Length: 325
Image (cartoon, helix red, strand yellow):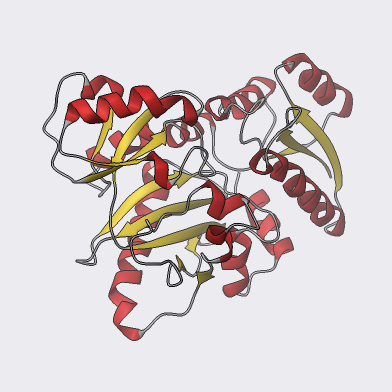
């Protein structure tokens, strides 16, 4: 079968987060070839006509959608499935609505809150202008649209009980977030990633992964920031390993995390694969941070690591994603 691999074309001088899409594309191409398919690379940029012409020229039977951004703009991620909907081409992963809702963190948090699912308190620029009551003592400034920890660092946090101080901080630091930004309450505690993979009998929650901050010195904020994800020579990258082994006392917590991850899958009508990121506070209460509808599929990424823990090979991952459309 001819299968198009659809991915965002990195812009000139792109960072490692953008360049990683090429690693994913090559990985999926190799696996598709191994499975007997014919992979066709189709990059997506601001020149949508180039992609349209490529689809017309190659007439793929299916599209493996890896697009995470267009020209480094994460807020355009939903354009890829929308374009494929217009072309009436079957594609892997989340549909247009799910991709839009999950990629906009404010909309995602609103959906979670309406469904009664726990997510940390947040303030958008609009709500800050109404001078709301600020109860938590530390907040993280995050990008509304960008993922991959873009703009996230310890310098993007603020301890305050003042809406005015949050507003001033947003005005002076917001541009580092590549566009619209918001504040989220920092949850002191543990961090977990739960990967989900479609199967014959419904979605399977793969073994939970915890990010270890054991080597972090006292006083250093325990977050997976941009350096921890992408800068291999940094202290943060080298000292935030994921682990899959847990003590028996974590059993009920892990089951709770799995249940919440499944509820996110159903709420956003996800498809193929996904990842839900959590913080767990000192009372063992989980808080949903983000839902990633198309997590990284590079060989060294957390999703493939979780699949390996479940005894699922990379070709099996790809097959299961393709079969859930």
